[in-house]
Length: 428
Ligand code: PLP
Image (cartoon, rainbow, N blue to C red; front, top):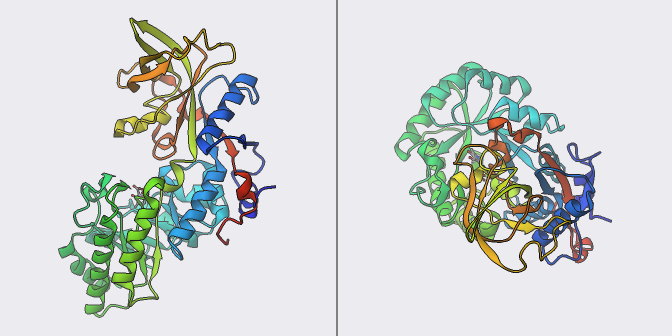
């Protein structure tokens, strides 16, 4: 029997009523378990698959949620829907107690449809079309970010009761993360006081401050400078005689692999810069952290060319589908899985060939890996790619008639036997 939190996930809207596959428990780790399940599916035909599919490990989502609670105590996560809006992922996160960061009415609708109430949504898009602001007001989403005077004018006109968070540009964040969001958003240091004054004279409530250090942070020390800049903004508001601010939004940027390091920096920075303000509510907007590692892709080899020792393969998902992450320099390593009909001899035993793997469209940009050592593959073999849930399916399109939007996502979960007896650490 699954632990209580896992049972809640299995009952969640978006999950309930769907088949949830149990990953093999004898695997050494979750990646092997996912690969093992893909192998079972493609060799037994149960469930029957003929083309690429994704797999979402709900147990991993639950584990990540528990780790968030442990690492950032008392910091509610607002999952950034833009990262991956798969309904089962959203439902699972909602069941675990997550709140949501939405950037558009469509994202709000996706979350509201799961029964999440509007007070658990933050409209974290600093520059919003007027009709979208009016929509947020109509559905009761009452917290939003801003970073310009023009945005304040729109908020005053279309959602005057909204509580605002001033989005700051993080100092020296340029190379701290794979994607620098500061190119586009965030008030400069010298803009903070004028923006606070403009909000004050418009009669708008500034509830706090938000920042985003950039996605997939590698230099986690950047959170310290960001928290310090936030404190400076809190002090600027106090100096202007504004009502005290309540909220510090530490944004996203987290990757599962460096999460503990980021938590250590953030917790120390909060103690250092906000230790004298215990009533400030700290919130986060993780996207990649929750979406990246729980998803795997299985893609089928449907084309092959041998050129001397080099092999070229075509698979039925690629750059315009789940693997669009390759355009940002993230190339997940393919794990080969042989179809049932291919014996090891047919595949050339242990010999590895430098291989190129193409996606299915006619665009030569649609290239997944080049010069990667793979065993001899045949038509009907499969490649499994792990950790492909962040900004992947969400960005995919149906270019060339290859319908990424119709790709099936199977749900699965894997919890090691020892974990069954260990209560996972969160409350609803
Ligand atoms: N919040 C905002 C405002 C964002 O723009 C993004 C990503 O672009 C996120 C949160 C999520 O970021 P990440 O996936 O790096 O955690």
